[in-house]
Length: 203
Image 1 (cartoon, rainbow, N blue to C red):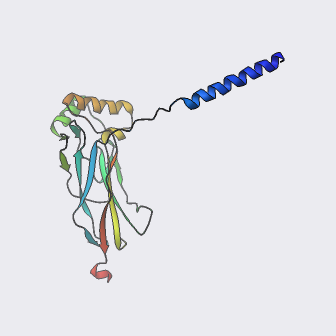
Image 2 (image 1 turned 90 degrees about the vertical axis):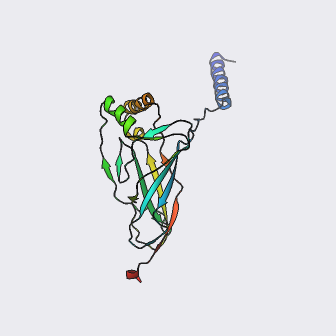
Image 3 (image 1 turned 30 degrees about the vertical axis):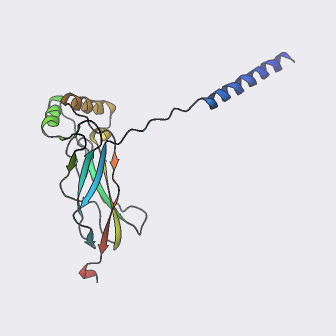
């Protein structure tokens, strides 16, 4: 075998061995985190008239073995500092979700002393298996079609929307100092069905 061919053959063997080793090496799967919170929508009733406003509460349940703490979530705007929970609705007769305008609050994180005081005195604290229910708020939905609708809520915790890793760590470490943990994951609930019927004026 000529010298040039020997080098080419050796490179092919080495390449085949490398590819085989890679294919046999196990893939490292990213472990999924266990859910921290469970959400449940509580509508003020099950049947609504066309164009009627929908008011809902959101129930939070702590699924962890530690005390969770978080600010009262904003329910009508997107707020990166306090976190927020938004309830939307969509009719079953149309596949795309009906969008409603949602405002955005550009909040600011204060000093560590103020943050610690807020966590101690104002933040919600949920021990394991405890439940917290928000106040009743108008859902982001416009009931313009009769039939069955689905309501669904999603909660975005504060640090998930802070915009920087440093600020997230800032809130997490402050909560740890107080003796609780800030939720880290966005949570969505199981959608709940409501019925929309024609109003007297529509008949």
